[in-house]
View (cartoon, helix red, strand yellow):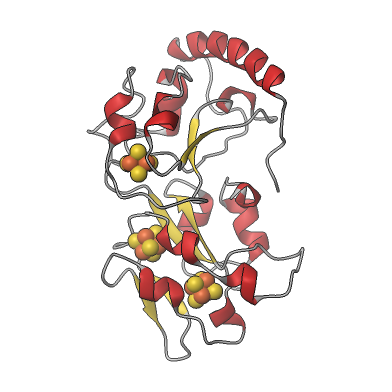
Amino acid sequence: MSGEGITRRQFCAAGGTAAVLVGLAGAGAFQNAQGTVYLRPPGAVSETHLLAHCDRCQRCVQACPYDLVQPRPLTVDFPATGTPELLFKNGYCDFCMKCVEVCPTGALSFEAPTADNIGVAKVISDSCVAWDWGGCTVCADECPVEGAITLDERGRPHVSEDLCDGCGLCELVCPAPSLRAYDPATLPKGIYVASRVSEAAAVPGALTSAQFESTAGKEAGRE
Ligand code: SF4
Ligand code: SF4
Ligand code: SF4
């Protein structure tokens, strides 16, 4: 589940090859090799557009004040290496749009459909404390979008796919890792943001850890 780490030297080598791939992509020669989608920063027009136009310059990575934007590590999905994805380790997205402002190639654009809606939060039913035995309402309490998370009669969170903008605050603050005993079969957090073009986003309601891992195109272990 975790991203496959590489050394700095390997990354630099990958960057050179990625530059070649960018040239090929500009000619429409490649798409995401694995058919995988990642959680991209605001302003990513589409996965194909991003892969074709991003020159892996890392300006968006440097611009994010909360260190959310991270370069994709070198994995079997080689063409995605160095492209930006969002990890909510240190903060959540307030849509300051600094990452979009500094993008020199149009890979991130103010005109993109994702400019104010990064993704959608998905509750993980076998990791969420409230779904398992109850008592936690942290994500619903902290969500900045009114109505995006509601609690049912059993106190379990549900996400409104129409209202959620994918800001990641719920994923950031979810205390499940500190409330639950470690279980390698379940994801650490009880809620994760997935790209709206992922299969996970198309599944209505909560998913199990296994369902999320197989449909989100997101290595939740990187968070
Ligand atoms: S919009 Fe701002 S907070 Fe969100 S990813 Fe871009 S730079 Fe970071
Ligand atoms: S904060 Fe996490 S554990 Fe608590 S209700 Fe929300 S998803 Fe479940
Ligand atoms: S990502 Fe989470 S905190 Fe942000 S709007 Fe959606 S449900 Fe609310």
